[in-house]
Image (cartoon, rainbow, N blue to C red; front, top):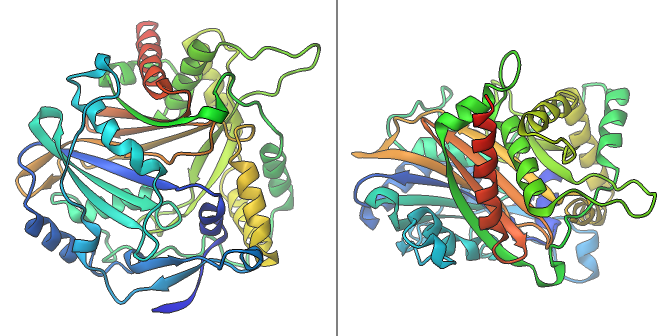
Length: 436
């Protein structure tokens, strides 16, 4: 294997934050689960030439050498589908009696251990998990990966290659992660300074999250598509995006579960911050595999009194987010810091992932090929599995596919919080839709 490939600063940060960083997408199908031989053959045929799927994460030695030696990608000569396609699993029993009979919730029992379990170190860090016992007597395919290898858009690109009835990349197979910007571009210092000022302020941790006894947990909720359309129509002009709507729904759910932050004496309480990823892919790099992303932090408008006011405030906050060159310059700055020594990136990662800086994470994706199928088995729903972050944090992810919108909540707080917040998001959506 070749050990000469360095990680980008984004990949290095994801590999050094002390977390499992397992991410995934879940595709639900109607029909019978294909037998292992058929699935192995399809994986070998559709993914066998993907160089990114042959990368093995090679960490530096433990001890003081870890502080100045970077991770490296080792390139394996190939991969055996049998090593990556896991044995068929059955969706287990739900966490609580009130969720009995809901196959979507049964799946949370099965996937909760995966978000906290690191990928095996000796193989490329991705797995495909077939699952029986999901909604409508169908099955699911769960594609899992370490975040340093693939981001959410990359996972969707790979599933598009695996399925039938989807357009394939015009230039052939997707390329591995490429440089996001070229060194010849001048730095936009004013934009970079504004972006840094937005990232540096400390926020507030969520109240009463029992950080010392945090419990990893996954919950799913099928959001009513008609309610989503109605809620998006609340916004003026072009309407709200799914991303804007998810942040507003998350804000309302947190407000209903935790209440408003209480000031300490006369001091102003910093707002609860939400981290929102920014996909930096262009038309030319739309199908590249890797982590072609940046992120921003925004203060959640918990003080806004109504669902409509919260949606309006979220849209205004996102409209102020720096775009394009500012994020490219942030990546270039990260690459420069990474060259100073990986210990700097590790320190920044642990600080940036702390509950005071990233108590909440939200991501919204769209699957634009609802007519996709696996042989004669139609795709019926798409969900995501965001990563589990430090104790005291929450992660919300919504995926739209056809006439379905599926919410996933990954909680590392008090036991039962993920299901409570998933229900609270659904209630917030209903209230918002009724106010149209």
